[in-house]
Structures are given as C-alpha cells and as structure tokens.
Image 1 (spheres, rainbow, N blue to C red):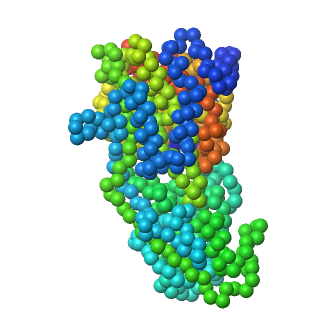
Image 2: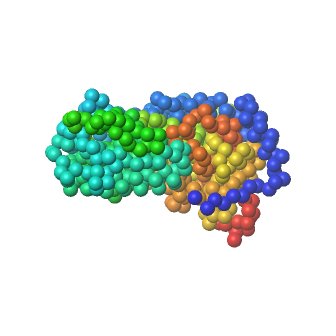
Image 3: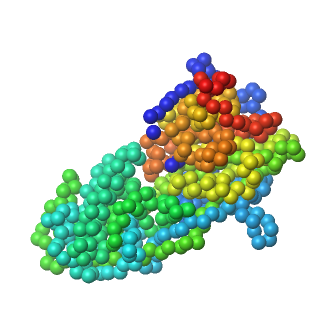
Length: 543
C-alpha cells in the first residue's frame, strides 16, 4: 500500500458478538458461520489463506517487484488458481481469438546489464549486492585504476585531482536504527543521499567519472531509500505514462553513483588501511598502504522502451440474464518492493500477500456458490494488479482499458493489508474507507458496516488511506468502493513483513466480510451508490 489518525468502532454493545468468532478463528479451526451467512463462505478458511500467503510471500518470489520474474511467477500462480476455480480469462486477446488471464500494460524499464556490470575491490568481486544511481549523461562506465581514499567526503578529504581511471571511495555516514518507521527512514535516507550527491558533484569537478559510496549499516534509512530509488542487479527502475518509480531522481548527478552495503564497504576500508571502531569511527590499522589498492567498476544501464508489466483478470459470469452484464470487482495487488541492496527480501506478507490470498479465497467461495446452484445474479471480476507500490499503475491501466464496460462496473471491493494487528485495527477490528465521515461514503461501505459484527469485526476509520490503494482508481471514476486495510504497523515496508507474522484468523474474518459484502451487492436489485457523510456507520441521514 502506497497519516492524523481518526478512530471509531461500532458500539460497545457489539463486543460480545465480536469476541466469539475472533477467538474461534485464532484457534486455527474453520470458524463456524454466523446465522444467515451464505454457505459458500465456509470455503474461506485459515488453511487455504495460509497456503496462498506463504507461497506469494516466499523466498522464491523474491519480493514480487513489478516486472521481475518473481512478480510474473505470482501472476501465473494467481491465474492458475482462478482457472482452477472455473473463472473465465478476461485479460489480453490472443492471436487465436481467445483471452488470457494476463492483462499486460506498457512500461519503460531501465536495468543493469548483468553481463557488463560488476565491481572489483582488490581481489573482492561485487556483482550482486549494490545499488546504482544512473548518471544524467552517462549510462556506460568502464574504468579501472586506483581506489582513492576520500574518507567522509569533506573538502579536506578530497584529492585535488583524479586520474581518468581513479575510483573515488567515500564512507557515507548512516544512522543505525533498524525497524524505524518508513517516514523516518525516508527523512534520514533523503538527507544522506542529498549529501552523497553534493559530494559526487565536488568529485566531478576534480575529474571523477564515478563515485563509490560505502555504508556500514544495511538497515539504515539510506539502504531502504535505495530500495525505492536505485537500480539494483535484477531490479529495474520503471516508468509509466511519464511517471517514474524512482522517487529521488532530482538528486541525479552527471556521473553514476554506486552504493555498497556493509560487507564490501568493510573490505574497501581494509584495503585502504582502516579499522572501524564500535562507534563507526575510522582509525588507521597500521601504516598506509605503500601503493594505492586497485579497483575496477563496469556499469551498463540498458533502457527498454517496450517492456511490459502484467495484471491478472478473471470473471465468474452472473446467472441473471437481466443483470449479468453488470459486475462487482474484487481487487488486490500482488506486487511488493522486491530486494534490498544487501540481498534481503521484502516478502510483503501483509502488503499484500494477505489481500491476494483473501481475494483468491473469495473467488473460490463464489465458484462454490455457482457450483451449488447459488450463482450470483451479477458477474464478479477478480482483479490482481501489479504496479500498486509504484503509484497504483496497474489498476489505473485496468480502469483506462477495462475489458468490461466501466459503466457496468457497479462496485469495487479492494483488499490490501488485512493480516496484522496494528494501531489502527487491533484484534477483532478492521479499518475501512470511505468511512461515514468521508464525503464519498458509499452504500457498499455501509453494507460492510452492517455485516461486520456478524463475522466478529468492529470497524475503524481508514480514510487516511483513501488515495493510497487500488480502489482509488475506481472511486475517481464514480464507482462506489469499499477498502479493507489494517493500517501501518512496525513491519510495514520492512524486510520483516514475513508470512509467519500474519494473523490468519483475522484474514479469515476480513475475507469472509468482503465476500459477504460483495455477494450481497452482486445479488441486490439496485446498484450501490455514494450516500455522503453520516453521523455514524449505520445512519441513514446524510449531512
């Protein structure tokens, strides 16, 4: 999911209703269905949710960064699941007139050519774990010569002139504060990278063709910021409709910048004769080396203007001849942040293997309803998008190139981050937006509020996330939406967001609520509509 926190829950009188189902779900057993619930809702259970989430957030998918093999593997897995449930493909038209489950969309991709990219420090070869800021005017660099000691990059630390093959090395000061909130990481990271860009420009004036920066803390704000903004081997920078996935291109310099994680940084410092104290201060370990150590840097940045990213789209056709041309959309995003420069994986378990697993379980429940003679009257579209973390790109493409007429999409049920207890939504709670305080509060959100107690959930207000997930691309086109989300927590956008930390009982509850809400809309006589601000969740009088 790409922050004044408002909070509201259903009346305290509902507490007795919410406690029982939540405790049952936490036991790992299939929770009993509440009175009046559709029988197919029993298909949504902890065991299947856990299986989907562990697969999507597993090491093999390498963080599912958009356009990488891991994200394409996630798309293939989701497509296979939808096909197995009996959904029809609604993606790209094929040459033979059939459709695929995959809906491809165009991106411009910049990536490091692995055959012509690598760093050598003495005898140490670094070919995987580093990050690059491409230069504004230079995409290819190949040079070898002295590794030049520039200490911390102060004016007094820099040589008066650099030779054409020299590789200047600067130790970038970083803050060792693991698991800091994302906002703090951005602040520290941006300040440190701005300093690096300033040092690099100073080196350029001395003849540098490249600048290499070392870091002693892989989990610093700089390391996290490079995840969003730098090129890492195997992880591209993408551009869609003129918008870039790199967040700080304004810091670009003429020459490329290379950033090394802790292990090669310490190796470079040893080559230069330094030891590093517990306080990260440099000290000479002995006499300076008689000859400058050697280094080599080869970089080649390739631009592919015709790259593609993919969504997955499937549909279960409705059973009512008068309503089947209308559809309810269930959406979730499959992508996440990929790899950190030190090789650590952003597993993205809560964000958003949890929502993807829930969407798949909703699809299975709808398929079961159809199999048992309870096919919904309207059609139901299951949409798994990529590019959410880069700016809601995949859902924007779907909305702009919908294979289903937009005026016949009656609602979107979006599911993104529903598997953790967080400050915004603890045990027995989930946040939704638009809430009753929002001008775009919808009858589908109000319906979710009516059903929530029956699955053991109270609601909190999640309006701070109204523009930050894929429902927004439906909402801006006038389609009523409801978005389920647990809110930010200590593992949000951290490499610690792993599948064993998920609360699968909570995912089961939220997935069941999403299914029941969408099924009710799919079978309703009228379409959902925006109802405007209310005094509380169930108030029928707009204000």
